[in-house]
Amino acid sequence: MGKLKKLCNRANELLDRLENILPVKAEAPDWTTHIVFRWRRQHNRGFIQPIIQLHRITLDGLHGIDEQKKRIEQNTRQFVQGYSANNVLLTGARGTGKSSLIKALLNQYAGDGLRLIEVEKHHLVDLHDIVESIAQRQERFIIFCDDLSFESDEPGYKALKVVLDGSMATVSDNVLIYATSNRRHMVPEYMCDNLDTRHLGEEVHPSETVEEKIALSERFGLWISFYPFDQEQYLDIARSWLKDFGVTEMDCEVRREALQWALERGSRSGRVAWQFARDFAGRQKSVNR
Image 1: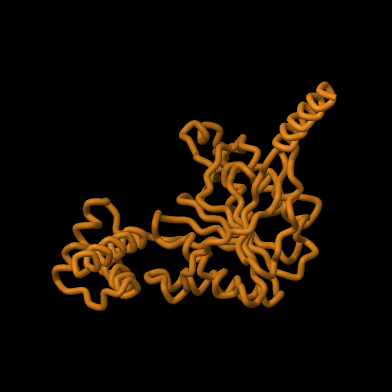
Image 2: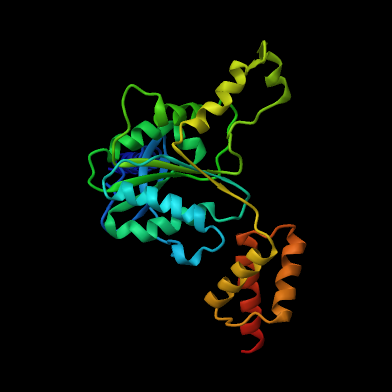
């Protein structure tokens, strides 16, 4: 009897270990309850996981990028309404609202069936699997890739290029890819790449290496560029964020502090303006408590 009990205990221990090793079957996403998701991998298996804590930023809360908002909102509205629309590449200066704009668009159109799936760069090799898993859904999906940059031999680079415009199997009509990057061409270009450039008379023919490195960006139908803010734009953004945090007036002293904050960080970006407003409002409330 003792041997049998010992054998059962060892069997239970073995089952516990196997449960920790074997992949757990992921539940199907609830596309009605949640609007933002993330592609995850566990035990060599990918699945779509809902994101609970959301950024509630709105389009009206973004300042200094009116032209960029207009262009991408029009594209997104077409997409949500079931009309043709383009994949979008947002490029330019850091902290100018590229990612925030996509989050605001989701909040704007989630009620119309828009959903977002965030995919990290090292998971882009799973793009085909992601697209296939949502191809028959009635919702409209943005696959969001943030802060992209590649080396040309990375598998994610090749997978994204094929999905955008290079596969025999077309991407479903209910899927678009929105990506952000600090550079227009997401693969670094080097001086040596130009050594193979050919000159035929007055014509210049770039090398195949250079052509390959710009091929990914060209597969995005819509390019939207973001630029550094000047001083007055930065202050307008800081003023707007201060109001959101309950500070209704920007006097000369607050203005001076906002400029000093930007100077210390070497940037007048929207992100820096938000960080200043958050810090200033918190300090004011702490002192007045």
